[in-house]
Image (tube, rainbow, N blue to C red; front, side, top):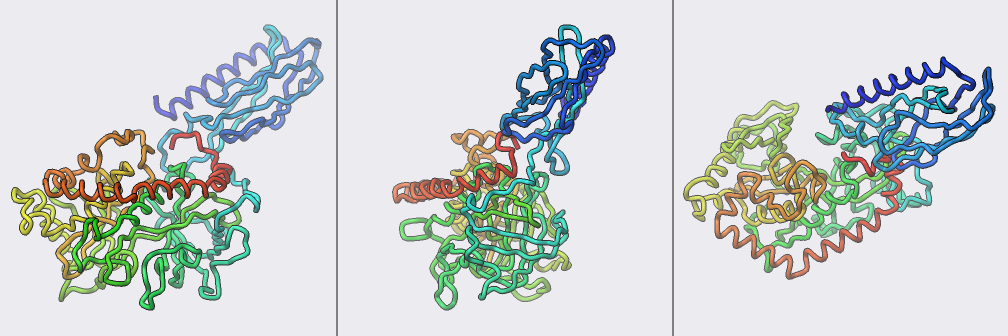
Length: 551
């Protein structure tokens, strides 16, 4: 039975019950029930929500005990027993489990749903005599009045102000300001002496997450700044002056992580990707490979991030992950950027692409195996497409995929190795398979790849989007972490794994990472990060009391 049909049946049954009880009331009523308030809100996990019940005597007064109950309660919500006598009042307490009203929050809808209301029946019974009163109960998973006390904050604080103008979609940029301070408010990271301009525009970020109550945001500032370094994060890349940097950028993402109750999955995947060394006993890429290091030294790059507490127009919104955006930049995807008007000369790069079923970029092409590939950069929105560029890259990716599926695909000069960088594809595999990434493993969404100018190789990465990974999925076999996934569920990786040389290199890389402590160090970092989020997690679920509900 569908969710809406179930609610309709519950309501019809409740009102039928109410009508039946009203008949009893009409037969012989010696008391009247009055609940205060008659409109009650409860949050999953909330205890002892009071409803004052007054019993007023009428006509033939019955002096004995009257049993007070509630009819029509949703799952996980209970009412404490209450017995009164006519002319008196008492308090009936409601209690909700953390999974209260799961049936009403388990429907896929076209807009975020934060509450459901239903009609209840307050029943006073003395033998066969009954008196009833209506009551409306709202179960809400959004407590906008909640805010942590200043002493309960141990993460940097992000405050966005748009003068109460709502941020409603992915396409409308809303102007405002963004202020970032330390947890105690003693240090202001933005604005600062080095970065005095904190004006920015904001729009929503994501695809399926747009239909969740807690939303993610894209932030674009007017000036480019190395925000994460300013907040104390150390990244291993170097500026032209030899200083450590994460990267200057105008654009950042505030990830809500609503469907990841640990908040740790995206952070953990990026941490592992950034921890996999290149060369010196590990798989190497060609010397002319793109690198964000700032030098000729090859280094990995995946989005870096810091966790923050976020306020929007004065309302506490919970724990957010302030994370770098996947984009072409000096210390990110460090490839030569094509101009949006270049029609002649060398158009062999650079291109940043994404395999994604949502297909909402300006230019999307399909490979011979049927994969939709977006062109992220160059970005032809709103600029018109440049056929010289789109024709080149779509034909090149087609040739690469055809080489992978050709009969001579293992040939080192004619097969897939002429088109794909092996090390990056193996590292991408390891991160996605260790994390058990449902979307990434099946090439459903957020699978990035890129190609630089005058370089024949396509590189897999950077990694992104791990909210439904690590067992956080109920609709795919990878819910079981022992299930093979990346190497069987898409089309490219089974083909790569059928190449004995590729399989041997995967094994070599895996053993190097395991034997040299990369995995154990990474696991320890997850535990350490989890400890720092304990307080913020409690704050977040005060604001969004949905910890026991399936998303």
